[in-house]
Amino acid sequence: MSIGFRIHPRPPRPASSLVARFDGIVCAHLSDNMARLAGADAALRPWHKGGQLLGVALTVRVPAGDNLMVHKAIDIAEPGDVIIVDAGGATAQAIIGEIMSSMAAARGAVGIVIDGAIRDAGALAAGTFPVYARAATHRGPYKNGPGELHVPVSIGGMIVYPNDIVIGDEDGLVAVRPDEAIALLAAARAWCDKEDKVLKSIRAREPLDRTWVDEALRSKGCEGVDAATEQ
Image 1 (cartoon, rainbow, N blue to C red):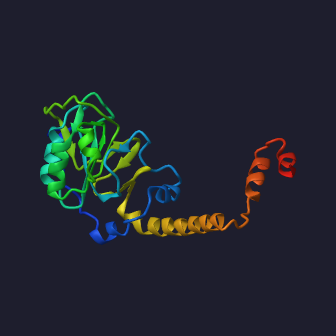
Image 2 (cartoon, one colour):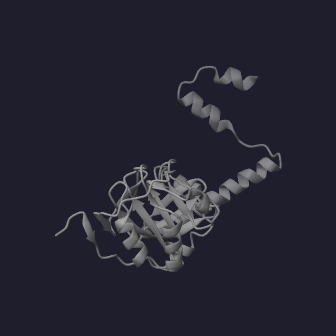
Image 3 (cartoon, helix red, strand yellow):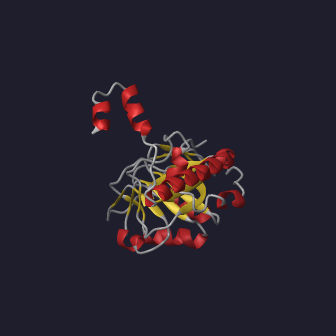
């Protein structure tokens, strides 16, 4: 047994039709309906030109600065996979660059997330293949191992399980368990409808009920609320 250096069996993937239902759903609406505790921290940001990241997590755990197991992940990636790499947040060495991201795209992967660094930032920024990472550096990786595939990983404080549905946009990243997807989709769409109505009212210069602001301030013991409201 090589604990920490092994390729686990991959669990069954969620149906592609379920994943597709998240197309166009923004991370903010998902996060708002996950108690605002979900998602990777803001240090993980997009390095590509733009567009939604949407796919199924192929999870990888590697030591800081080493990408041997990431190469194996690319070799076995299936169409629709997002390669999710827990590199411990280390940024001294790049884990992937233009060549590896191009290989992943050629395999049918739909994005790469690195809790660590990338390189070839200019080339990645000119393309539309989604890449998220903490930083960029010219220093390349080691290829010594160890590492694991198909294990739960931590990405910017967000736990990602194998085959989670991963959504990314300009605001960041969210991972959704497939068995929670239907309920979360309904909640996010309702949230979107509610926000659209508020924006429509603002643009039409219609009055909005803002009494909740003062009520919240009073409930928390803020002084001067009534005097400020009367001004």
